[in-house]
Image (cartoon, rainbow, N blue to C red; front, side, top):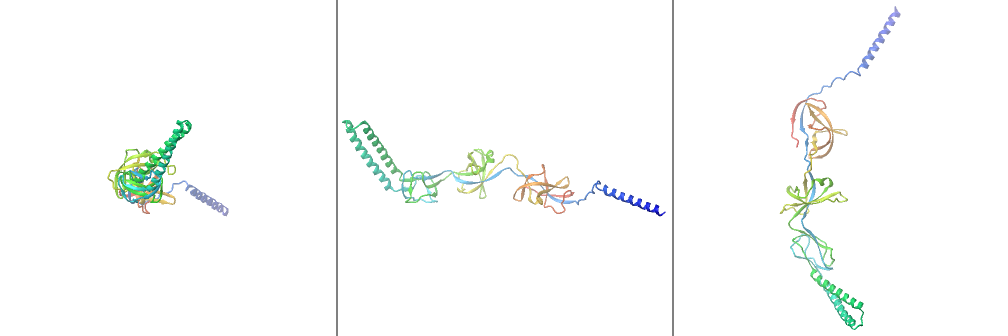
Length: 347
């Protein structure tokens, strides 16, 4: 009797253990119970595609600018104008010491007189057979050389005064009275009145967007002006890898040379996608947004780019229309049903 009872209890224990193991093993294959999400009311905005226009830094320059130099060597006697002074066409802006030029003229006259006397003497000797043809040729050559030197020295008298080639403003002075002036070395830089240019050095990727005659918009100090591209220099600067663009401002513009302006260039194709900065969700290194899809909140991970004026550029992520939740509360989670929507404008 006792033996049967013991065997029966053991069998029952084994059976219960088997049932327990089966129950534990079976739980791995049963689907987890669905988590119920609370419905949420959200404020949404549609992501928007920004314009493909690009804005570049540019500067205003005078349409005419010249560096004034002397055409003769000598000491500067006077430079009667300075930076900021206005000058008229033909106005004297520098004067050489006339004594230097006069001394060169006197020297050239002396050399010419000597060459004349030498030529006359050799000519008479050659006629008498006392001088060779070669000696006569040398005397003729010396006379012609002295005559040319004298003409050059006398011409330099006309170069004592340096005049402005056009009306404008002196923007730089590189020499003072007493300095040695030589041809090609600037004394002054004059900026002409009238035409103004907007000059920009643009990146190489903008080359296909700029052509001569194209109308652009320049902005300065809260004002805008239409400009027309007058020159495109296709050669790239070796250091910056940029090319130069010049555009004419409308006649009568009051924008001063040297002013820094913004130049708007229309890009080809559509712009990139942008979302409000307050819609961005950050989880460690990941960034994304909560999007409303078929009345359900979905967390969509995005790769974001630059930020501007409260918006963030989307570099990679879902394609198509994207309606994002702004200022998500802790109750806004992936999979939550949407009970109400308030829509705000994006851009």
